[in-house]
Amino acid sequence: QVQLVESGGGLVQAGGSLRLACVASGITFRAHGMDWFRQAPGKGREFVAAIDWSGGRLEYADSVKGRFTISRDNDKNTMYLQMNSLKPEDTAVYYCAARMGTVLNTEESKMDHWGKGTLVTVSS
Image (cartoon, rainbow, N blue to C red; front, side):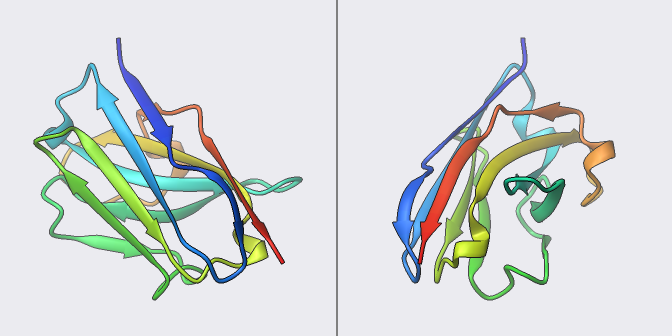
């Protein structure tokens, strides 16, 4: 059974930092590209960041470039999202997602597996 479990969400003041983690089980983690998406209240889910199977290729949404860093540890089956300089508009449920293969992907519809999400709330 595939499981992606996010953690690390919480309440933080604007300008603060959080580090999210996503632990995968039931998949060959190093064979999957991994993404973070988020869904703000009343809005659709949007792409945040992606990392390929090796960690060598990264991609970010323009809204988070320079503030967020995606990384992975294949020995621990874990992906991370370091979020710095948080803004109230970063408030959302953050989801991790996995896609089999070596292609870097940013499209929600192409992801194979999803976590249940972790809530990040940034107060002004």
